[in-house]
Length: 374
Image (tube, rainbow, N blue to C red; front, side, top):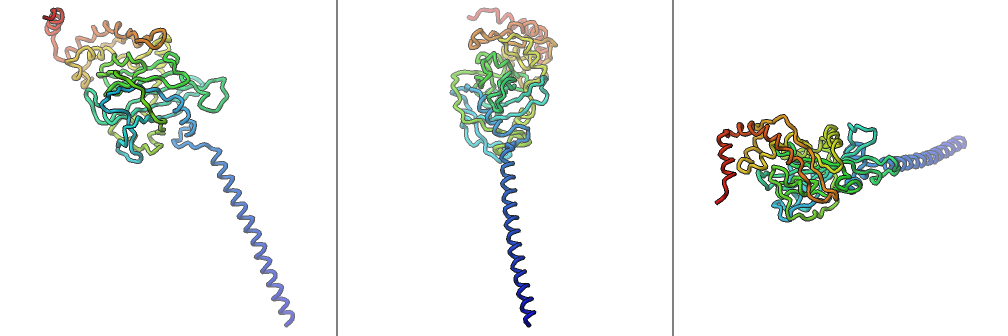
């Protein structure tokens, strides 16, 4: 009996020791798990968040967008008041408030012609409506800037980058496309945002106030005032939206197309480089002859603007540049207007034919113009 008692005693002691050892193991396991969790958390914090998966962290993109945010000038009597903020997480673009919101996009340029890294920023002013001539609901307009890193600057932040070129979209992809670009140094916007004028109602963007009057889209930059905008909201990419901007891909406006392309095509930039430092280049100079006809022909302007296919191109190219005065703030000297005459002469016959006008009509018009008003 004594042996049996001793055996039970030893068994009990061994059982207790196993629990004690197991407790030690559990504590070790718990400590190891906590340490692993802390390491994982630290690692997650060490890798910056990149919500749109383009290789640029959200923090870095935001810093660039705030630094180079344009200084927009809008019309005080714009019929759509001011740019709008849109309801997040709704596929259909729905205005939440017309509160001067500006949206932004940042992405690395994939086809940079130089070895220097380049980043392209787009700034979108989105409107409830285009309420100018031939208006429509919703209006997506933008300007863009191409950045390069300063080779001698070793800082890993937005201040190490400077603007090289600026682009302003004006009636993109239409016969009245007056989009243009220039060197950042030409408009004194290498280290900060450019000053941009927005036409009343139509909302086309212009890098010079005088340029607003050289399109054919009925643009007017009058009674301009600074846009008091909150911080730029990062859109992300169309296939990886940020801030709930799922409405970017809506077919109700061409915003997705604007998000998915660079405005600094190599041919465009090369053409600008061949011009003097004081020049602003048309992004699509081949459209200038037809635009001058539309601009000067008020009776047929709307008809021409809606039927670009009826316009026959002359095969001649106009001078693509506007030259700024020495102080870079005066009126633009429209060299394009001066040199367009020859190209217009080559294309006027084709355009009149498309409109059903005869040479007799042309002669009658010239006689009427030469007759003094009573």
